[in-house]
Image 1 (tube, rainbow, N blue to C red):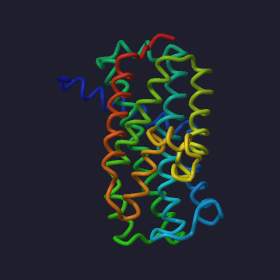
Image 2: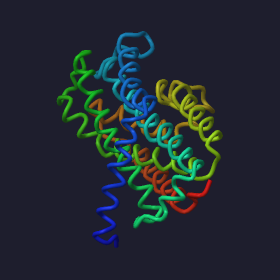
Image 3: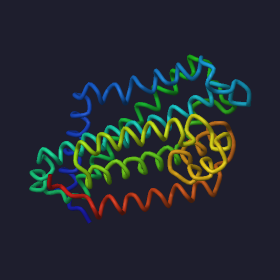
Length: 251
């Protein structure tokens, strides 16, 4: 159990993480501007199909929210944390009342708050672009909320796992590389059933494709695929465990 003093310290650490996030211009671009730009491009461009019950904008919402999860939980969090570790900031923070796992938890909570803002902005912009799901935007997002939360935790854990194991320069390359590959070939923009057989089969069990498929289902008014949900839960549990047990605060 975390004592009352520790909960206050946890809250202070979370507020600090949110404050630092607002002061990083590149972080603000990735978390706020990038999803909006991608949504507009996909909604009005020829990349996505225009047919289906959800239409092009509806498909774009699922894609953009998946991209936002990866950009915020994987890229931004991994790179910022890696450089904090490299500069010795995390080592000095070990003198606080919080254990390392709580320090990592504060970072994850700050990411979840940031992502909540992203959801609101993406939803509002999508409605301006013509998104009108059958049960309404609020109901659609509420239905997808469990998978948004699970996906956020999954990518946060992956980002912290990279940040705790690799040098900052390696994290910079790995996080951005994984992001680009996942968006282009990971079943995010192009569904796994439209990828070449072996590639589609390989990526169908990975977190980016699982999150994208679950969001396509639930935002489109369908029931979440139980197998996809189980696999994403397993990935999230495994990555959280790995990040918590292997994270190093020393440079």
